[in-house]
Length: 128
Image 1: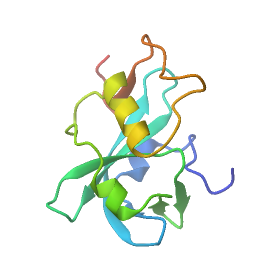
Image 2: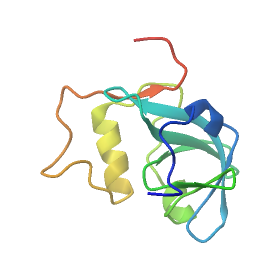
Image 3: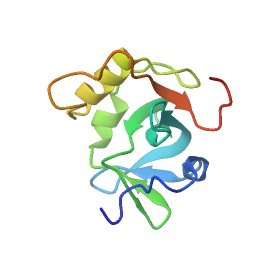
C-alpha cells in the first residue's frame, strides 16, 4: 500500500495540505481530519473548496499522500456534490454510511457498520 495515507502520521499534519481529484484538478485544502472512534485512525477529511467556500467530506482510505498533497481517486464534481453535514461536529454512523454510498465505497462486507461502532470525532479533540 505504498503511497496511501499513512495511518502512523499525525492527522493534524494533513490540515492545510492541498487536495486534488483523480485527474489532478485541485479540489481545495484539507480543513479538518476526522478519526474513527473505534480505531483512532484518520478516516475522513473535510476539504475547504473554492466553490462557495464550504467544506466537503472525503474518505481518506482510497487517497494517497504524494509529495505533500492529498490525491483522491474521485472526480471533483463528485466531491463537490457530497452530502453536507457541516464540519466541526461528530459524524453519525448514518451520515458516514451516506457518505460511503455517495463515493461508491463498501463500508463492510454484508452491510452497514454495527450500530455500536461510532465514527467521526475531530482529530485533536479531547472530548469523549
